[in-house]
Each structure stands twice: as structure tokens, then as C-alpha cells.
Length: 517
Image (cartoon, rainbow, N blue to C red; front, side, top):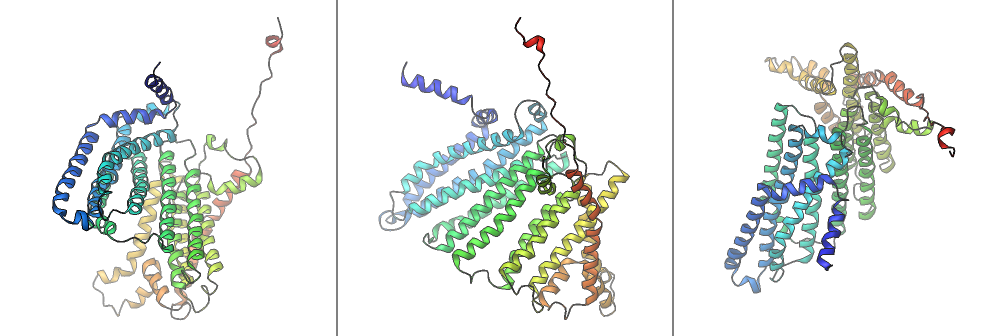
């Protein structure tokens, strides 16, 4: 048997161990008109760039820096394929599975939702690698010209893989979310608009970035790139968890994986910041304004996650209860991560409480009496507890009235509460009232608008120029949002701690069947 025949037999045997979705999607994608057209257009565009670029370069081929200019043109062609075509085709592929009701057929097979998501992803990455191989001979041509930078080329091509992974997983996540026909059209339009924005960025900034000199020996550059990579991989993991959860059964655990991923992002956010401060010196990120900026992004991220976690229904299926840990300590630690809106609000509170504690460890004077930045973060946390807490409590009340209330309804209610609270202080001005006449009313109602009151808190010194009544109003509203959820949170934790594990029934073998005849 020849070596080629043995290699072919080995490859056929090895393909049986691959993800079946990967095999199916790759076969379909490589035969599709979209892939063939994109591949041919890449080759034609690269060939035209080579011919006309060489003619226009002239003497700079030997004495100038034509290599970098040609590589920039090749990279723009590659970026259009891997940043736009591949993510959109992955989105349409998974969306067609849902439209043609083939997802229901896949759910009854032995394939897990994670295998489906990863199969779609790696099928898209196979196309990316083929596009890379198509552009490789042209990039090799530029390596023989002046101005070619090996480090720049390796860095640009390597970081593009990470960006493509995140964009593709983002589109797969959006396709996995159940959508109606009208919302599906809106989502497709938003994705198309987002990819058009990517095209604008490619043509406007990518050539400028590649033509600039990158200092690879600069510590600040590598710290920034390291933070970018960590953030990208964390969001990639989060998008994977969200896509997988939306493809599982309704009775399965859809929340724990997402909450664990968000907690990992919370920890990585502070670790990256601490690492950057350690590597670049204590003088970096040392001012109180920078501390408020760092805390604001963390609170905003936590509030977004809590907005979805706290509005889930409190019901827990038997399938999820079977996965509750056995020991009391592990149950107590796992309670905030288990499904349920009451436990989701507890999850939100625990993460929000850690933000001022961490900031106080690194910035001792942040919460001093004369500082407004530290108390600005406390005010932001109070607004999150206020609106999310009231919305979660109101949604829990609506579910007692009607079983048709969905989490999306509760989230819309919270957004409406936020919109009304933001517009209410300006309502007298809409009716043409004299500004001097409604000034007292505006100052009384501006605490409802977080944008206005947070800007006031940031500019003024806390406790001196801000009305004490406004501070007490915000504290009372935040306390009310917390108080309305204390009992549900307690019941949610007790439900986990008091859960009786179902013992595994093992049947003893029948002696009549096991004895020798």
C-alpha cells in the first residue's frame, strides 16, 4: 500500500472524530456561491494590487518603502473577507438553522448545543484560514521589497485572528437568541449596519495604523495589547456561554455559565488594571478621577449583567435542582450563580459591593469628605440598586397576577421607568413654563435623572453644595429597591440550602439471574 493511500485512509479515520457540525458546515460552505465569489474576488483584487502597485511604485521598489504600502493594500482586502463576510455568513448559517426548524432535529440527537456552536465557529475559521492561504503568496511577494516589517506583519495577522473569533462568536450569539420575524429583520439590519461600520473603520484607520511605526519595545504598548487580548478572550467566552444557553432546553440551566463568565470578567478587569499599575509604576492610574473612571466602567458592566440576571423568573426546574451541590458550603457559594431572579439580584449586589471595597484598597483618600469622585461611584451604585431593584420587585408582582409575563416584559418596564425618571425633571420646560418658576421643582425632581444628578455630584463637593434632601431621597429610593428584594433573596438562598438531594437508587442484582445454572 502506497504512502498516499495510507495517508488518505488515516485522514478518513481521523475525520470520524471531528465535530459532525464542522464537517457538514465546511462541506456546505466550500461549495457555496458566497465562498467561491469571495475567494475569487480576493485573488483578483490582490492580483490587480500587485500589478498596478508595482507600476505605480517605480523606483521606490528598490529605494523606498513600497513593501509596507502593498502589504497595507493586501491587508485591507483580507480584512473585508474575515471581518465582514465570514461573521455575516456565520450569522446567516445559524439563523437558517432556526428558520428551517432544523435546530429541533439537532436537539434530539446526541449533539450538545456547545458542539453546535463550536462546529459553526470552526467552520467559519476554516474559511478564514483558506483566505489567509490565498493572500499568503502576495504577502510573500512584499517580503522581497523595501519597507517590509516582519514583526508588523506577524502582529497584524495574529491579532486579526482574535478579532475574527470575537466577531464571529458575537454574530453566532445574536443568531442563537430566539427572535420573531419582525425582530429578526431588525437584528439583521443592525448587524449589517455594524459590519458596514467595520468596513468604514477598515478603510479609514487600518491603512493609517499599518503605515505608522509601532514601538514593539515599549512596555505601555504590550500592556495595552495584553489588556486588549484578555478582554477579547473574556468576551469570546461570554458570547459562547450566551449562545450555548439559548440553544439548550428551556428546563436546563441557562444562567450559571453566563454568570460565571461575567464574574471571571469582573476579576480579570481588576487583575489587568492591577498588573498595568504594577508594570507601569504606581504613578499610573493614581488620581481620583482615574479611579472614578475605572469604577464607572466596572459598575456599568455589572449593572448590565444584573439587569438581565435580576429579571429572570424565580422558578427552578427539576433538571436544574438535580445539579445543586451536596454540601452546605458549596451550596451557599453556588447560590448567586444558580437561575432565578432573586438570586440574580443577590449576584448583582455582591459584585456592586466589591467595587468600592477594591477602590478603597488602592485609593485611600477616594472616599474622603472633600472628594466627590469616590462618592460619585457610590451614587452610581445607588441608582443601579434603585431602578433594577424596583423593576425586579414589580416584575415579581406581575408574575403573581399573570403567568404570561416574560423576562423581556420586566426589562422593558425597567427601561420605561428609567426613561420616565430621566425626562420628568424637564417636563415643565416642555410646556413653556418660566425657568425661574419651576427651578424649585426641577431641583426637587433632578434626583430622578441619573445623568443630571451624577454630573452635579461630579462637579460639586459632596455634602456641601448638594441639597441634603436629594441625597436622602436617593438613599431612600435605593433602600426601598433593596428592601423589596430582601425576602425574595433570602427565600432564594434557603431554597438552595434546604434542597433535599434525590438519592440515586441502585437495584441489587437478582441472585437467580447471576447464579450459575
